[in-house]
Length: 254
Image (cartoon, rainbow, N blue to C red; front, side, top):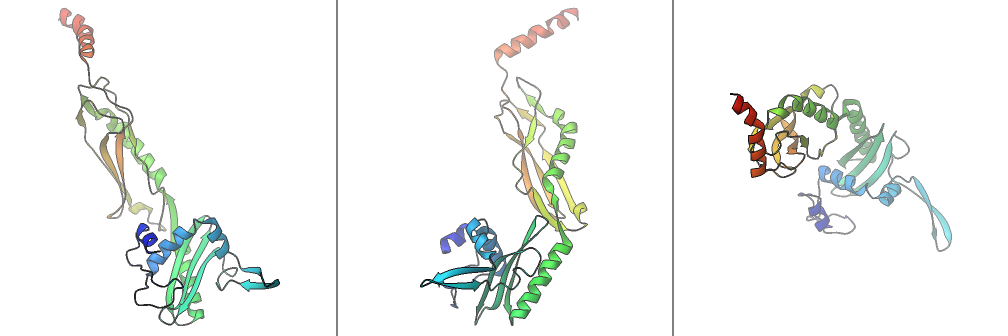
């Protein structure tokens, strides 16, 4: 469990007890519980179990119905999990997954005095998130800005000693294709493009020539390499000879 926590980048989580009961060296944070939950929900069986309100099982051949202790499941629009909890030190806890209109959020409430309090706080967090935030198509914005920049700048790039003077540029992979932002703050998304305009051949395919940086105000949320689409070969002696003979009539006329 601790190895998995390290693999997920959880720096403030440490497991000691397999059942989760209190121990000074058994701890986590609300944020890292959200990361862990997001990872766990990729497991289809886990996602199915935490989204199940009731289930009938057999004990010694006798059917028995058991119920999910998540009080929001089936009672709040979009809730599809995940986990309730209680210990003497942690108090009442609730991790909730909620999906509306294709947008999923995870909320974590820890240390509530009562079950009602954790329910109220969870509902407030969920409703606040859906009321105040939206997802934008960042990939679409990036590609549009890059194409506009290419129309002006692509032909300005000069490759010395290149076999072919035409350079075609492409973007490397965009990691954050859609991102959540506060409603009405799309204007805070800014794109900066930095590029070197002079190189010497040869250049390999996917050689980095610049960087496209996406900022939300001053926070960098994406940095994408600008690359050559194809290999750019260096001129050979034959290329220079052809160039010489192509210019020869002009030289003679002069």
